Amino acid sequence: MTQLEAKYSNEKEYLQAVRGVLSTIEEVYDEHPEYEKACILEQLVEPDRIFIFKVPWTDDQGNIHVNTGYRVQFNNAIGPYKGGLRFHPSVSLSSLKFLGFEQIFKNALTSLPMGGAKGGADFSPKGRSNGEIMRFCQSFVLELWHNIGPDTDVPAGDIGVGSREIGYMYGMYKKLARENTGTFTGKGLSYGGSLIRPEATGFGALYFVSRMLRERGMDIKGKTVAISGFGNVAWGAALKATQLGAKVVTISGPDGYVYDPQGISGKKIDYMLELRTSGQDIVKPYVEKFPEAVFYPGKRPWEQKVDIALPCAIQNELDENDARNLIENNVLCVAEVSNMGCTEKAVDLFLENRMLFGPGKAVNAGGVAVSGLEMSQNAMHLSWSAEEVDEKLRYIMSAIHDQCLKYGKEEDGYINYVKGANIAGFIKVADAMMAQGVV
Ligand code: 2IT
Image 1: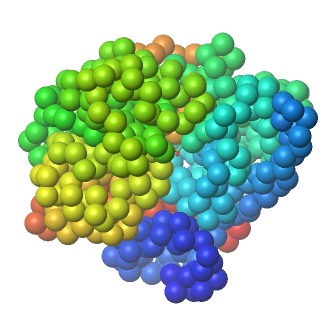
Image 2: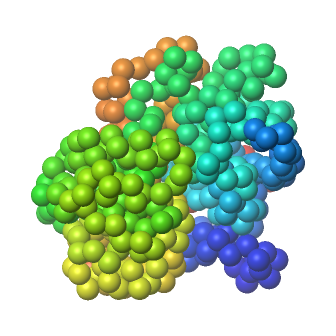
């Protein structure tokens, strides 16, 4: 860790993600001297390769813009590189290395054969027209397509990349590669996409949270839930939480958060989609449409008293003060639906206080799991029903929970999900790397 901190001193998020894993696997690492002999950690923390490229595009006024595109192919010990693409101004090498690193363990937890990768661009889709988005996506793929393929590297969506962007990227990929084998997941249903993929991250997260609560003898029914964000992940989480009988009382955007004491359900959940497609990246219009709700400008939802807190927006969106607030308000469960949604200090507080805390790589693995199922369907040239996919998703989330129990249960009976998820993911990848030699 000290070596990495010296070498990559400006890559804060990457170092945070690595520290998070290394600090929890020490026991297992020490029990396996063969890992150390094979320098497994030194091999694991370096991406296999990173592509960095120029993405030039023309706006509707004819002005030319240049962004930076990336693909971090981190580790393919257990399967083809797999992970999303993020289009957001905060994208940097550090954020994509953190996301790619997390993806290795998350994908291992799904039990499907997928390695870890992540990519994206420092492009802001906010306020951009459809034509501008299309040209950007096409330019991005024109450079990247050589390095991806159905058995090489399969990108998907993430923040700023939804089914529209995947459609444009896949269209360009197909034109260049002259084949129709999948290669992206999150595709539209009519051209190889999987049912339940749009819902998968949120649904999977709620299946996982229900299991966590049950482990402590509680039921999600009747509980209040704070959600941050209002994108695809927040939408799926709100939908499933409501279906399971919980009451979602917040969503948020870069402009602040909305508190709706009557619960965000039914047409209010549909309205989240409208908010998103407006392209303005704000949630304030919610209170104009539903005046029973209150808008808190510039604030985050963690100041509200709720039973369950689900960060669904971006990394480090819940800090130490938020954690303290939630603990004082007797929150029952906090689960990261966003990747690394909580700061290191927030996580430490939850664990020190023996809280029910679920880390992103376990909680949000349902998204990439259904991506894996989309790859299976594409490879078999068939499509499964929504019920079949949902059933497999439930099974996968339940199996991830079992792995967390197996490796995370401490002497006093406390389930440390952070430790459990990290150890389970690490062992699988490390053993696969050991078996395949120094490559
Ligand atoms: O963070 C994630 O797991 C994703 N953005 C989904 C990745 C995928 O390949 O479906």
